[in-house]
Image: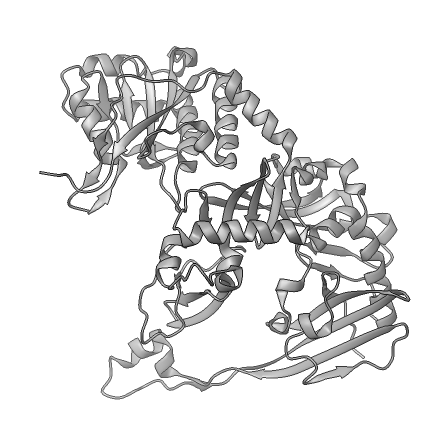
Length: 565
């Protein structure tokens, strides 16, 4: 018999049995007979894909278009095996635990992932790994735009080598196991499930033993004594009543189209650059394809009745991928899987990501709030006006570039750098800032909008561009050239605050200003999502402590919509 040395295991939530987590159970399932003290069911399928011909493949169709009749013919139907294994293990007379394994391409299609324990793989991985032999980590930062990051080392090393900070949600780790598990496992990859490479071929008895040992490791708090202790800064919420309350609050916000702390993001890494998104299965009726996931686009495709709208409704909102090369549409996720939201409940902050609610630790909230209060970060910046109408009549959009142009035109001490293309690291494509004030204020402007990428880029750009301004002579040379090539009555003054040589830069003389545009009557730091506040703190720390700049944030009310005549 061929050896099986790779497996993937899911843990099932307590109180859930076969007929809930195994789709179509018991139809087509076979009971495994060669195991004791356990009950195991298997569903196997030899799946056949739809017939594809040369007319279904764009590049073959293009080649054939050069001839009077089809010159190149193609016809194929793929076939592949897949299976799921449901496992029930008896703990005592009244308690059982359930697991699932999947095999083959799309074997998990038989598994209802609403019933899996989403932090099982990552927790087990943290508790069985050799902390000095990690290979790869995946993290996410959930703010107004979601950042997904994968880091991989050529040589196995410790977690600190990956440079992860406490604001990143740890989503996956892979590496080698510690000595306690080296007899049964070579390496692992843990996320919602845990994928294993085994030193010896799997047997049914070994499988039961591994599941039992993983159950103990999942409940262990050993990881809290290691570099993984920051994992609990965002604790998984497991109380069904709290989860139901949070889901209800979220549904109310979506029904009211209150998207200020809600957006969409892919729940997993998407490597296909030729991918668009759509929200309707019927290709004939729906040709709206989107480059990015947006909550307002998704909601616009569905009718919402506030009386019956629920999380179940959102889970029925399918999101499809569309491959332009193959002209193929296929289901990716449901709406709930892609939701990123921040909800306040009983003075606690919860974040929804990857279908899981997490509670932000009070310690982290205190650190952020005290920092922002004590550092006097908010400044008025009186020369930046309020109540500017930022509607672009040509593009029919409200845009911050209208605000920037208005400031540059009406404030003589400001030079417009919006739309400049400055070289950094050999690439001439960067707007080093939006506005430059003669008092050495380097100003970055962004509108705070709902349900979309908003001001996260503001802080990222502030850090990146400030470093470039201070250390990159070519960057400053092109800034001076931009001034020369554009009109202003005080060009020499602005050029004088951009030194040619690095040694002439004194960072402490410059202030990095983050200007946030909003359309509310009142708006301050407390109105920003918590993760945005955290990023603001990190940016301020970097600019003022790691570097020597001054830095502040200012909030400016603007008017939206068409200009009234």
